[in-house]
Length: 348
Ligand SMILES: [Zn+2]
Ligand SMILES: [Zn+2]
Image (cartoon, rainbow, N blue to C red):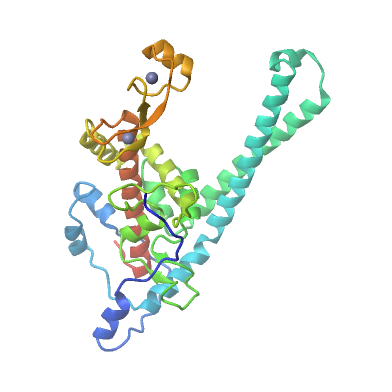
């Protein structure tokens, strides 16, 4: 098992600062936040009909990034943080409201079941229950208002245009992803001048690592018992939700990644043992959720979970997870590119 230790992101890059000092004199260009629209490789690829994993070098040639000093990028990141403030506040408020709505709904359901079901309660007058149902209706309305606010503030955000023009990026889930991610390009607080804690990410791989999408020793990272996760699990979950939206959106530009990854791993075998594809140690069949179903389906009365061994076939759900993971990484790559271009002030 891999041991994961919580540690801050470290600055291993040698970017614009080095480039600027090599060039001789430091740049004095001030960051201008006004007319910036990204020109990421993704946009270029979509326009040129190049595949999603397409020719990034070609895109880079078409829209080269201007030379920018660390201070220029840092002041852009400070602007970005100001533009993101309401995304974060709205996403957090939505989360709180959603939690209250779900918890209240569970309480109502439990009460109704305890009293013999909703049908029984319809005929009886229960003032307390109807008050709680009114509160529930209010929570649903509040949650809708939070979703609307998130969508509204997203329109003024540097990455708002990317959401608006991409099939499969719902404003609600995209806003929540941005809220969880913070700045896809700049790591840490840009007001912090320490380059170890506050720095531009070198490439999408550093954003993948931040979200826990970087494999360690060829294995996808999973939270293990007793280990601290050193990635942002909220951001990972939100990226996953976006990937699920893409899965359901045939017109999404990321569908190709999804379909191709699924095809690539169909019939693939496990290299290491796999918990999510566990089989029954007694009969060797897939696990059904309940022992009685396992007995009925496979005639095995001693359902006993065991990891799928190396060399065994990936279950369809495992193949699907790999495809969703590939989509999530492509989405994060484009968020990185788009945010990076915005910081550089690159325009179409
Ligand atoms: Zn598996
Ligand atoms: Zn069995």
